Amino acid sequence: MEKGKKSGPLDRIFKSIQGYLTPKAPISSGLSFWRELILTSILFTMTILGTIVYFPSVYLAWTEGKTEVLWIDSFSLGLVYLLLLVKKINFSIKATLILTMNYCLGLSLLVFVGPEGGGLLWLFPFPVLAGVLFGLTPSLFGLLANMIAVFIASKAQFYMSLPWAMAPERLYVVGLNFLIANTIVCVPLTILMRGLQESVQRRHEYLTNLRLRKAHIYRSKRTLEKEIAARIEIERTLEENLREKEVLLHEIHHRVKNNLQIVSGMLNLQNMYSSESTTSEILSKAQNRITAMAMIHDHLYKQDKFASVDMKTYLESLLRHLVTSYFPSGNRIGFEADMDPVKLSMEKAIPCGLIVTELISNSLKHAFPSEAKGNIFVQLKVKDTKVHLTVRDDGVGMPSIQEWFGQTSSKKQDQDSSLGLMIIRSLCSQLKAELDLKNVGGTSVCLIFKT
Image (cartoon, rainbow, N blue to C red; front, side):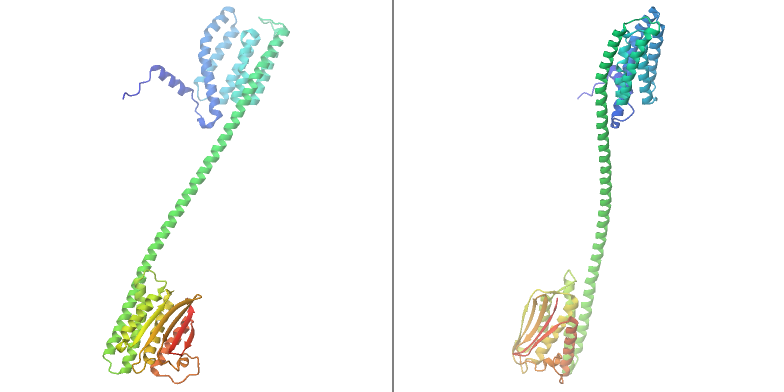
């Protein structure tokens, strides 16, 4: 494709003139921009047309001996050139000078040449330009000034020797028609300009408010972005800290479990080298108690959350361990479990595990003498926000069970059972559990405590 055509000399001249005439004030300034543009356009037009008219007018004034017209035209054209070319002059000064020149030129022509000499034509745009450039009040003063000019002209022909003459009645009619026509054009145009000014002002205020709101919204957005970034950073830090704590808790539970298993292994070794049955039984019970606690830590280590323990899974694992540990001969004792999915804190899970271990140990020792067969039942239920943990057997029963738990007057207890039952009583107190003891058709111990 061909490149755009180069601009010709006329285009360059036109663009130069347009750039020179364009006001310095931005177009966003509203009516001020258009007033400056109107004034500059008037000056440019007066310069071109005034230059064209100047030479014939001067020649005619010279031949007729009207030197005052020659001086007026020369001064007016020079002033127009000055106002057009000197860009540093303030708008108000330029507008005042051009209006003053317009009025003086019209008044001079009206007085020295007469109504037919173009004076009224020069006076006609004076209030109109005053209204356009300055507003309604200057426009009304311009109409008053034109009225004064007509009055001065009507009186001047009687008191001065002028080269023209007109009957007073005719002069009054001409002047009155001139003023009426001038008012008809001037007032509506000035009111229109005033309305435009108010509209531009309202638009400017609206845009200003809009910019302020936009700036406020932007600042609010930046503030929210900073707050969100800060919150994200805080959340990220908290997540990192949480992950570190989870790793630490995993490691702690793993180490505690390993240490408890080491202790359990040492007790098992000691048990293997013990020749006394009583000592061996005590070591086995201690080993089971330690294993019950170790299984809690193992269970917590294998799950993601440490706040609670799944009691159903934990107790089922504990029962399997106890069955393997005690291993009744000939499978004469059966184990049954009925458990709801209950979650307890570690502070409550460990006492529950130890209590179940002690109760099952007591049932195996006392409920089935002489190789008797039977069953041990473990039940875990939730009723009305309370946990019901029951260990029951269908053995011969334990006549002294109320004494062991301090619910009747104490009798002499077996030394082997006293430690286990003391542990159970202590753990029940720790859980703040209620005890429901039954000794009919076997032994039943039910712990009731809050979740």
